[in-house]
Length: 234
Image 1: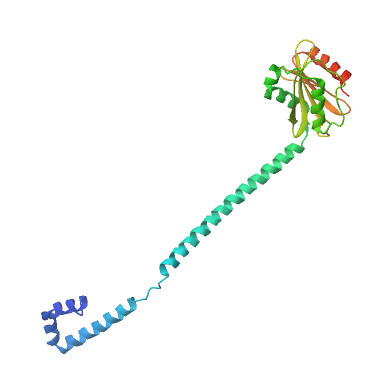
Image 2 (image 1 turned 135 degrees about the vertical axis):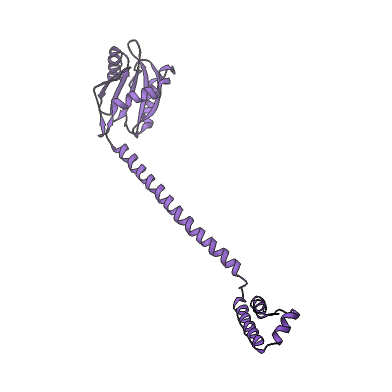
């Protein structure tokens, strides 16, 4: 085996036990010394690579990974919760301000008529005692009541005027039906004596205990019901 081939074999596999390789080594003290140096270096490298792996290494690595994932999720969840809380806070403030703001009674009366359009088609033939019971149950009108039947009442139910519990009646006018809203007095209420849109006309007036909103299609009907209320509501 020539010198070049020997050195290639020595670098690649210093512990080779091939007969030709061993013979070439023993033929030269320099080769034997060179090979021993390579064997020592190879042994050092092998010892350096033989690092004992802790028995719980895999568990620690898994735990570390889970902790990183948890922290990332917390950061994400924290941002989401903060965003939701901010939106909820703004919505709550907006809702509160809306409830505390001035209320255009005429506008709300028209909106209620459209929202409860079926009320104009109902005929429950409501007695004034039942209406008085509903007025008393509101708890905001004191002892306000009707002293007698204010003409024919087709429909009666409570309703909400921007957070204020009110009463919604449908009554017989001179010819057609008239919707009446009885709303407890509040400073934030804005009362218009007359209001209208393309379909309905309305009148508003106040008694000692409530606002009265009348909505119908004919001025004569509104006037008729207004007189009925003045004569029967105390």
